[in-house]
Image 1 (spheres, rainbow, N blue to C red):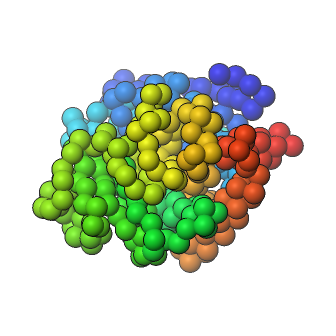
Image 2: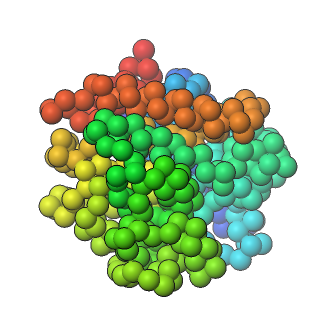
Length: 357
């Protein structure tokens, strides 16, 4: 686990009154305070938090931000918490990290943690700068604006250009029609690409003639799942790896693609909107048959937005910076690839050099 980058520290916190148990990994502060979201799940592990923190170290360095990398997790089941109990746990977490945040660590939304939870973290911590992704009334640029999904699409457009393809001639599937997946679908369909499959935790809807984004968004909001779309085929969410289309955007679970799945994949391009959607060794194995834009390049829109919020910037400045940085860094990365060198290897070299000097 340890190398010349980090991790600098892994901290476990517990609050007996609320029952809150949390894990914080500060991987690197060489470029600035460690930046990375807090997720709330019953199966959060120390190894998972470290892997995500390392991805944040690389992501912030690749994006050219004065942040290091960190990540945290609260071990709890969101489905078993009412609002009051969840607030108690999240506030206890905010209080428990006072010795770290914001001096060494700045947190943000992640799985089951959104802008309202950031309000509770601030209430527990006492310092507004301990997190980003806060509600607008607290000076925040909430992730609900769609900065991560917007950034994923910027990376996708650069990659399509690299492959000699136009968006209007492309079909794509989205794994995880949540915040990132929904906004990625929105921005990419606006560019003319055809959405043919979308999944969530309950299943997947497939319509090769094209799903209507606006209709899908309403169905997801009102019925709770894309499987209520009404037309097309409904399948298990894991079957998204078998869809015959040009692009897969991952936007939810880690380790979606596993060893042995190689022959299932017909995509020409995979853009990692989610963190760690496959083992890194698989990316080497699939290259150059499949062009894969790694997570810490493609989904940096959220942390770029966080930086703009952290420095008191505006929403307009955020959109501009996300586009400029992700387009520039995706192009730099793709210029360095070869048949023997995949995008992640190139991007990792760039990021490590920026961290270590």
